[in-house]
Structures are given as structure tokens and as C-alpha cells.
Amino acid sequence: MRHSSVRGEGATAQAGEEISGGEADASGTVPPQRGGSGTARRSDGGRPRKQGRRRVLRWTASVLSLLILGTAGAGYLYYQHLNGSIHTDALNLGETKLGGSKPNAFGQTPLNILLIGSDARDDAANQALGGATDTFDGPPLADVQMLLHLSADRSNMSVVSMPRDTMLMMPKCTEPGGKVHPASKGLVQTNESLQRGGPGCTVAAWQELTKIPIDHFMMIDFKGVVSMADAIGGVPVCVEQNVHSRTRDGKGSGLKLPKGTSVIQGEQALQWLRTRYGFEDGTDIGRTHAQHQYMTSMAREFRKNAKLTNPVKLNSLAQAAIDAMVVDTGLNKIDKLYDLSMELKKVPPGRITMTTMPWVYSTKPGLDGRVEPMANEAEAVFRMVREDIALDGKGNATPEGGASPSPGASATPGTPSTSPGTPSTAATTAPASAPAKIAVSVRNATSGKDGAETRVKNRSNEVAALLTGKGFTKAAADNRTGAEDTTVVRYATDAQAADAGVVATALGLPATAVQKSEEVSGITLYVGKDWRTGNAPTPPPPAPTVAPTSAHALNGDNESACMPIQPGFTW
Image (tube, rainbow, N blue to C red):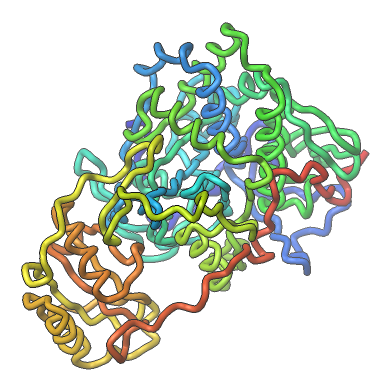
């Protein structure tokens, strides 16, 4: 395991000094910018400057992950000797297991990969790049988090970034060795999830929030980014004016570029990816948008040049990448990374959409400057990913000739399947039983998670009777209760997965309503707030067909994207 011990619950991840040449002074106070306006919030939704501590070289994990995958495809034979060097960690340390992505009607399975950028300073290379000597060998933070969704038909890819300062409830996480990190009793900054057992807890936190099944994670630290940026031959980026990321007292990334397009690589690429002062309004949101521009530009570069054919350079790049990466056990061999790279390469840049999770400022005491998911619009983005709806509004490809569903397609929501060429992520399940042989406990969870509704009396008895009428003669009301916004079916073991799917199908529930969980001992139906009356849950409103404007979508073919420059940072 390559993670460190947890900090106290609820501690914000911002104490300590800025990286060398960073953006806060020794007291942790952000100095005024040149031509800036103090700490006032902008009327256009920009985030205020906050006290900084541990402002890290937060280059995006996505950039490095896609570089690794792209080069894996180009130089497969050179990578064989690296198998033993791949670092792995547990995929999901939380209690809720969604069972991996489910196939569509044609037997095609989407892939969801969580890309994590760790600020670990656990060796000389990371310490040289990260600075901040007071944080050496300390607990790492997940300062970059992006969910990459590859559509089931491989026609499009969506990437959703979560702002580092997002406040969430953290789930209970249990390390493989048995150490337990209890569920948080209050909001915790999302980047602290890494300290609650490792990347598997970051995955668990995302699943709890989004209800999106995550198939893999890739976690990258500082080292390797410079040599990888050099190997690709540089990435074109654009700024609307001359920019110099430097405050009066020498803070900032140091990035200095002339107006227009420049090709950046090496340490200059690092400067671009960590620049906050100088882009847009000087906040982390602006930095995220700059990372998106870099990532889409880099994807285009892979498509149109062949600069990674030199065996010596390729091997050096591979070693640097592997040394800097931790993956789940489902990606622990080069051939698995190779298969994944081949799947990713099927998507043209014009169907790659970069977005930021819609957010709002937290109004809770003590959380000034932190953000929370924008309830309706963040959920719209999450739902589109869950239901495999392209964020660019162009839809998915139609199988040729109006093909019928594949013989390998799942007949029930709870039965996992794997498409050809896709890394397997779900455990094999037993065949489904007849309804009369499936024992189902029914719990009343009609109050909803926010507790805004009074729990409907006798609801578990009513739904248990409904199930009995559908042939589930072993269905019974459970005197225990729950709190769910939507009705879900949870099961305890892989052997129960197919039976849980039969229950969901009988009630007309979607595949995402079937969840593996350690909180139940058998198949348990939680009757949620969406099913307070009647014989079926209230159907959800129609799914959106394009990402909301608050997600700031950037298309991979947009070569005209150019970063706005913050007043006072031009030359």
C-alpha cells in the first residue's frame, strides 16, 4: 500500500505552506495580486481567493493517464518488462459496491475510470517537484479528481472534474488489513478521501455521491510529468493576452507566455497545469479549465504525430510513468493497460467532452470559499454518465443494420457482462432463481435522505404484499427502516446478484438500483421517497440530452480554446 495515515476528521486540507514559488506566504495568507481586488467574490461566479497551504503542483492525472494509455498502445513490446513494477491498491474500500458497469441492450459495456492526482511527497523526485518541505512524507491529498466515462459503444468519452474544495460526507472505508475509517459525521473536503485508506476510499466517495459504478482508478503523483511532456514533443496551448503568473512578492507558478498559441513541454507544462494566479479570476476553477484545454490538445497531438516511436525514449517514458502510477488490481498488467488503451483510442477527439461538476458556494458556517455540488445540475451530469448519455448532445452510435441485442447481453439488471476487448471488472454471478425461491426483506425508506418527508406508515408491508402477488412468496416486511431518495435493491454476496436483478426487473427498477452492500445480509428492498404510494415508483423525469451550461463543456476538437487572463498578470 502506498497511502498514509488519516488526519483528524473534518480537518481542511489547506494548512501548511505553499510549494516553493507557490501562491501563499509563510503565514498561509494569500498575498494580494497585482491589480487584484482583494478577497471579494466575483459576480460572475468566480471563486474567492482563500487562505492557502499546500498549494501543490496540481497537474491533472488525466493528462498523465492518457499519455500512459496512448504509449502503451504504441509500444506494447517495450513494456513487457515493466509488469513487475506496476503499483496496485484496492479498488473500493467503501461498503457500497455497485458491481461494475452494466451492459446495454446490445451487450456493450461502458467503462468508468477515476483519475486521481496525488500530491504525495514520498521520495526525492516528488519532493523536488512539489516543494513544501514541511509536507515531506506526510499524508497525501487527492488534489485532482476526474471521472472518465467511455461510452458502451465507444463512440464518445466524457470527463467530469470535481473541484478540489468540494465538501462531501465521507463513507466508511475499511483497509484490506482491517483498519476502519468511520463514516464522517460532517462535511469533509473531497481531497482528504485519499487519507482515509487510499485511492479505494476516493472511489467509494465518488460512488456514494454519484451512484456511478467505477470500474477502475489510476492515481498519479508528481514524478514523470516532465519526461512525459517532453516525449510527446510538446502540447499547444493558447492565452488571450501575454501572461506571467507571478505576484508582487514572487508567488505564483512562474508561467510566462506571449499572447496566442505556444507549444509547452517539460517544466513549462507543469507551470501551465498548476497555474491559478493569472487565469480567469485566479481561482482553482480557472486552473481546472486550463487543465481541460491541455488535455484535449494533448489528445489531438497523439492523433496526428508519431513522436513516440524511439525505443529508448519510449522505454524511459514508460518507466517514468509506471513509477509514478498506482492502479487497481484490474489494471495491474501491461496487457490490461494495452487493452484499455485500444478501447480509448476508438474515440475521436471531437467526441471527447471535458466538464466540471456544477457547484455552488457552501453556506454552512466555517466553510467560506468551499463548494458543494449544485443539487439539480450536478445530478443531471451524474445521471447522464450513469445512463451512458453523451455529454456533447450528439448521442451514441446506432449498431449497424439496427442490430438485435447481443446474445451475451444481460437479461437482468443485476447480472454483469463484459464486452469484447474490455477489461473485466465484475465478479461472475450465479444463475437467477425463480421468484418463489428468492427471499426479499422490505424496508421502509420513504422519508428520503434529507428527512424532509414523514415516513409512510405500513409501506414495507404494502410493498411486501405486492411482491408476494408477483410470485415472490418469501417476501416479508422488515421492521428496520432506511432513508433513500430512490428505491434500491441491495444484496450481500455475488451469489445473490442475479436474484437481486430479478427483483428489480419485476418492479421496473433500472440497473443502477441494484447494489452490492455490506450493510445487508441478504436481498433487501429499500422503498424510497420515490415510491410513497401506488404499485410502482414514481418514474424520474426525462434524462437530459446535453450537459448543463454550468458544467463548462469543452469539446476535444476545439482548437480555438484560449485561456482568459486575469487583470494584473499581463506583461
